[in-house]
Amino acid sequence: MALADFQIHDLAFRALDAFQIEIPSWGFANTGTRFGKFAQAAAAVTLEEKFSDAAEVNRLTGVTPTLALHVLWDLPNGLGDVPEVRALARRCGIRSGSVNPNLFQDQEYKFGSLSNPAPAIREKALAHVFDSIEIAAALGSRDISLWLADGSNYPGTQCMRKRIAWLEDALRAAHGRLKPDQRLLIEYKPFEPAFYHTDIADWGMASHLARHAGPQACVLVDTGHHYLSQNIEQIVAWLLHTRLLGGFHFNDRRYADDDLTLGSIDPYQIFRIFHEIHAAAADGLELHVAYMIDQSHNLKGKMEAMVQTVVAAQELYLKAALVDRVCLAQLQQNCDLVAAEELFRGAFWRDVRPLARAWREARGLPADPLPALRAGGYVERIARQRGCRGQTVSSYA
Image 1 (cartoon, rainbow, N blue to C red):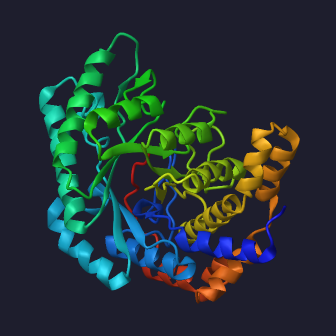
Image 2 (image 1 turned 90 degrees about the vertical axis):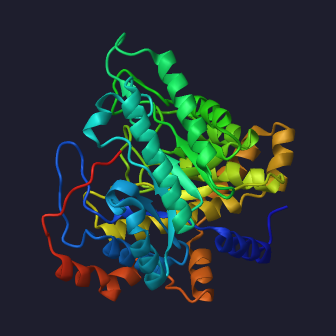
């Protein structure tokens, strides 16, 4: 029996009320590829501008109350910048979100950071992680999001087993510095910038390191950090089952880690991921999943791309929430393949935009955030104020 209209309405509103997604400070700044940097007049340079942009996105969408921060780019003075960040958070109504250490830009990290063969460099990298944990604690941020560029480019040039041990030791030490309410999110990537091997190449390696580090460590899934055609939702199901799923960096990709706007290439994949999470929640699993965007908007307008991404995430999350899981479970049990797939696909093809508009209007938000952004004049105003000021372009992975 299909869900009644009133059931769909109530389920949709509950789902949208529960959904929040974190936006990255670097998504508002000028970024680029290794081949070219394209500056935008409205791009944020200062942390104040990033907080201002984040506040505008949250005003329009109502679901982005936190801003992810990158230590080197946003807090170059470490703990000394915390008072400014706190003041900006109060002024803009945006909380500090996950704190991201930077272990890939320093020239000393050419051969690795936490798994560098040189003990002094490993100690320096670990000290930066310790500092990042303290910064997060001072800002009231729960998650320290750790991505390493460590690896090697040529066979035989590094001992992979030694590097595993160095990583185990470092992450165990970092875990020991966590406050009781903090988490260490361990991200993985099978390729780039190292061309032969990366030290945390897949979810299995990240899971092992999380278990070794301690109970407050878990795995971060970046949807762009996989080989082509890899079944990401199966990875998510395993991480849910093993209670190791900590969160996501959402983006989309055509070939590799393209960091295209979410849902622009394969929205069905994001729907399938969200379905696994909704199904786990329906089965009674206690979930603490952080939804975060990690994108580099090089050609699209940064504000437009961010709002577009948030809206796409809401719609795909809502589509997955409206799967009739009771009926689907029965069809799965009976191995009724066609009916099960059609029910599943039907939820994906449902046009949820009217429900999302109704929810926004009921919550006092613009019914359509992207047209509201364009009509409000915010982008034009900041473009006039900021201009192309020869901004420093952040490296990005």
